[in-house]
Image (tube, rainbow, N blue to C red; front, side):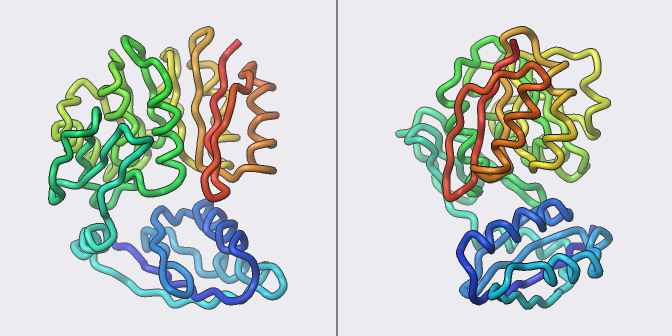
Length: 279
């Protein structure tokens, strides 16, 4: 698969203007972002890059927020170097150490996850992944059945196993992600994770104690009914991939209409992760 790198140069406006732009780009299919001195780079499968839609998005940016961009085509074999150049070990809640295979071990932490992301998203660096992991580290997982929807590298599924989950289903609609999960689960002695390629059709008639969904606001809204139906009574849903404030309010209202009671949320740099309970 060929990927395109779109380098955005930003000037003027507020810091949150760039955050909202990144969120909108995520809705367009961009799946990875890299901070640059005067903006950021975003990555997308070349076949999904819609330049007309991108131009329309940039035209409607707030007054005073100027954005220019350049598109570079990159070869698939160069993608790993993008990750390795930026991937440093991450510590979450002083409990979980996330590293790549080329980083040293850190046995002082109770949990260690080894991730080779390749072209899949999810290394613990993004605020939403970190927030989901913080929630999980405070949740009892022993003996539970878990769904990781939009699993990326499988980092959340792997953490669920390390926390004692009995059954874990990891789903993503990108076969690259599913292949990444298969590799990473072996690295982490989490072989009973089942990774499947697809979407909501894969969870019909299945039930889970915990659902993890770190995707984006629009997909979460579209799939909320399915999450609610798949949860057992008193089951827990964790969601992230959206902003605190309006996004959270919209999702909270939608979740409550599906019988999911708001429990709590955490926020980091404007991003949020929320916990809901099926009643």
